[in-house]
Length: 571
Image (cartoon, rainbow, N blue to C red; front, side, top):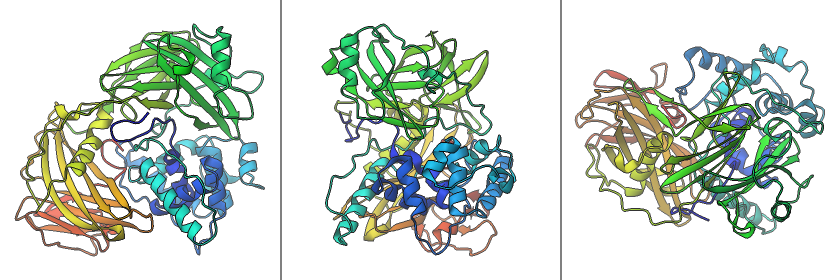
């Protein structure tokens, strides 16, 4: 079922491989291109690797980080990530792929060798100058420098369609089915801050680990007819599907199967109201995870009124849940977790409001230590309802306008979604609005908003939308936090906006400037070179030439940093 924006229920999205693609290719644009090529080569991690090893480039790109420094990484972590980037650049393509698969995706040596024939991982940590035990955290820190918020799954779907059309027109690919991708939010199940310890996992005799090990749990595990009927609905795989959980909890009916596949596991959830007939249970879709699986399997079902989460971890573990980030008065954002009732390693909780990833998260506590912090491995948005009309955004403080409603909603959602807050309940000021030329000959309408949280802190966000003969585009740009007491009348925001043309043929970046009327803004790179002083129209301007190199600015002599997608308080 689709929500009011036409988004499909989904588990892990193909676009969740964006950090992996970034580590493999060395740049944001190249990573996005690899995602599309990976879908054309069969999809998933195997398709991504096949497409990467088959690339024909004059030279390899260099991992430099193009999205600002993520808020959760310390300066020391960022410096370490950049040093690792330089070391990765000295490896061959196959060696680099082996490193990413082994220590970022968590595949064992046999699985790496299957995807990268002839690859040997033994001496690679020494060549990188990083102990093997530290490589996963260091790679996560480096992957965090990617522009992870620039690409949604809907955009990836459009790019795959465009790539298929282009290949078909050259006679290289017969017309066929187009991949159907899921909801328009790229999120990363199990993405942890650097240094978070991995969970210890129990293993069965057949190699199944963690929460999948041991006998199935739940009140319906002995209902042979139900289990057989649902197992018959699973996609064919190497095995028939191990039943992990089946039962009624928190007003819902939940059934989880896990299948083993190359390099990882595939989970399939069936959900519906408690007591629902087998035929009425909804299959959420397969969710692939690498290695032995997550610390816990989890499924969330969101409605406009509430969200229900079920977590299956190892017996004896405790589960704590958060509905989203809390923005403190100094502008920092952090999650606050609360314990929920956990029996035999299974926790079920109903939360008010429609909250989902990346706001909704849980952590697993074992022997009084947090062993994992994750977002749900699967999420179903059951919002078959009519959305209430939004409030009038009002006039913009700066810029010629117009205040495009679609761009306004996207900018506001980018701030509200990670906090789990109702956008209608947040005070919003439109700082600026105007138009700029977007890739593919389109004209984009951009809107920058400032959202004030109960702590008094302010978070700014920019988004743009454009429509052409090939369809429409909605893209979010940078997010940035400001402490309580920030004067919105004098605040200047400079943001990098980027995206593809509707036919996926062109990728481009634009720097958008929003300032109080009469302010002089100077743009430059980190070294203070290539200074540009754009002419502002009512406090609004855009810069296309050299936009990707612009990282800092001065507004009437006051310094600032260009906000970029992937940076800011919500990463």
